[in-house]
Image 1: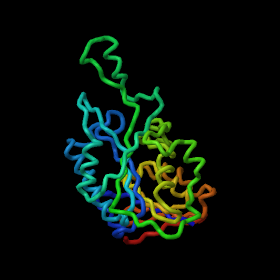
Image 2: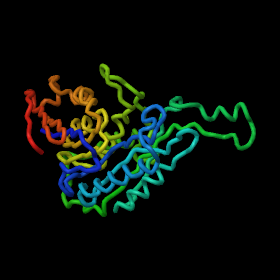
Image 3: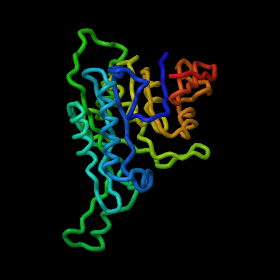
Image 4: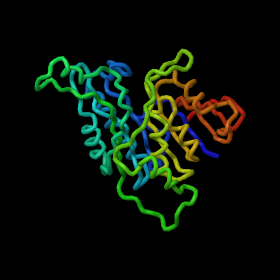
Length: 288
């Protein structure tokens, strides 16, 4: 049985979590004022970096010593200006106390270009200085809180499938993964594109053991919690938009009768807990 907490609240203050209680953090923060997903959400780039700084500090507090924090992000083009989000996020996490462990490039299918074909500029103006490349990648930043003390005994239940590791080329710093189409809908609720299941699937397998706790401070539609559940891990997810609850419930198959029936799921709205345990559904109000 695994446990999962979906907390509708601000991840800049993860007061529900004790110090050093999380074994892995994997998330994708909102893209800074992305024209389709988050246009105008942040008043300035400084405000955006303040969010990253606050959540980095909280992540460092709740993460166990030696464990991994993974941030899926990328530089953003907004109204003709390119913002160095990858570099700034790396600096912020290092300032928060993390070691910079590695970087992976997530390469999307070549035909996937969301905003415009910037490279077309040079076709109409085939001269120097007109080159603007089309972006088909995102960056997966890997940070570590100190050094990990490897256990003397191995965990057979969390043994990696070496064939899967090799065939899908997890060992490279470039991962080819198909993205999720943007603005998918569940009823009348739309949400920005989530990262594909494959991203947290690889990260959770590579950096956590079964039964450990996985955190996603920007849960969105619930992908990280679903994958953690499938892989026998516990999870905590923070999300500001309460309107996403029906989508999260659908993704976690709440009340649908499935392989997830043994999971215990809590929906928390800071001071209200709505619990889904096994096949029974009941509401419980309590102070956190």
